[in-house]
Length: 116
Length: 113
Image 1 (tube, rainbow over the protein chains, first blue to last red):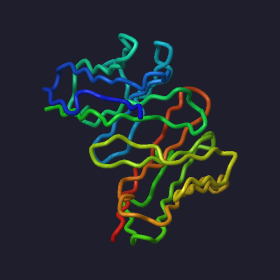
Image 2: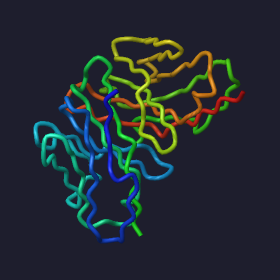
Image 3: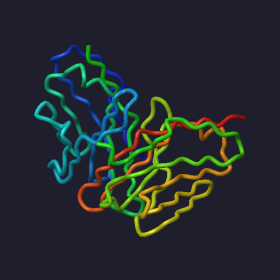
Image 4: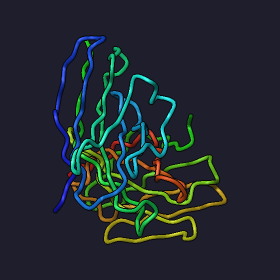
């Protein structure tokens, strides 16, 4: 069964460093997303991406964050200068068509980011 | 921002009995409601969804009920099995736009043998 894959599974970084989290969405999907979950809190929407541009972003997704689809398969989240509060599990998700039969997003297993 | 709320952080149910997980929402613009299941160190996995034009959707052991007037939905699992032990997230979205999901805080379900 096709799945969303994410790398790395865990990254430890120093505050102020740049981090890139990588995702390979399901191959025929067109809409891509990043969500995050701070430990013990709810899963929060960060950004959605379609047709090579951001469709929607949350207030969390400030100028320190950026997304890119550099080729036909990868979808990346970059945090330019990490802060302690960026420590979280970051989930990539994709879907063929939002609002489809089930409205389902397919999530990856997540990348845990620890900022020291 | 508490648009989707799951007021029970945990629930413990005997194997074979019914598990009922509850979810409330405040935004009347939501059109789709979904339940996701999450095991530790894994991403959320889709379980079942319901459109705002329906009040019930059933898939095997899982049934979701929607009460729009009360802005309340529930997930029923019957019979409950040990493998159902996980964190269950309620989520809601608007059909327009790019399918941003708003999640509840999650309910940890434990099925006891």
